[in-house]
Length: 265
Image (tube, rainbow, N blue to C red):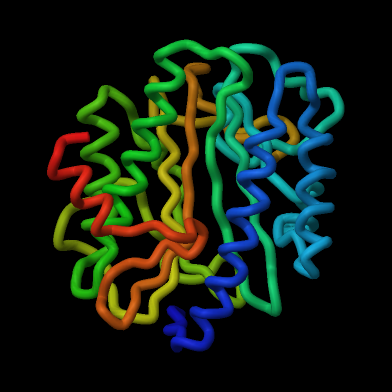
């Protein structure tokens, strides 16, 4: 069941999103070679609780961390660990969620660990481009297939694959609500979007195959061929004007983004 949020509820989600943005930016700043992912998890949980929020991943279906920390070929759901030490040249996907005053925010980014290859940086950049293309299609009157098609087009145009076994999702009082938001699809197909919908769009892009396999711990999901993977996510709301507002990216302007696209930047 899809829940439509009113302006007051979206304002609450906006507050949660702004806090999560701050948390993820601080996590980005401290990532360095030689640290372990449990250090990141402890830091994230402290930041979240300092602001009277709760980490929504912790304990979710038994997950033991406040963040998902997924290096290199791990697409998502990496369990933070003292034995997972970050190496120079790796990339790390950090996914984090929190609950503030009963409302959820969910966001992810992929960061380089020290100096990384040009190809790794390109994968990260294209994954972000996939997100913005998909989010730009999340307007009232469009369909979910328009989002998935936009993501898929950018990924495949750049020689990458869209991981198909994992999706974005609705979000609100619960971290995972209807509908599922696929990162591939056919334009003009699927559920029609409307103002008041709140969703998380999260492209997971592989430099190789789109096929994945799950680790023995039942959580970590890796590319089946060991290729690098990148993850980027924001929570958004479709506003009264029919346009998507990125709740976990404060200050973002579609007008500025559209202008950049027109210049080919």
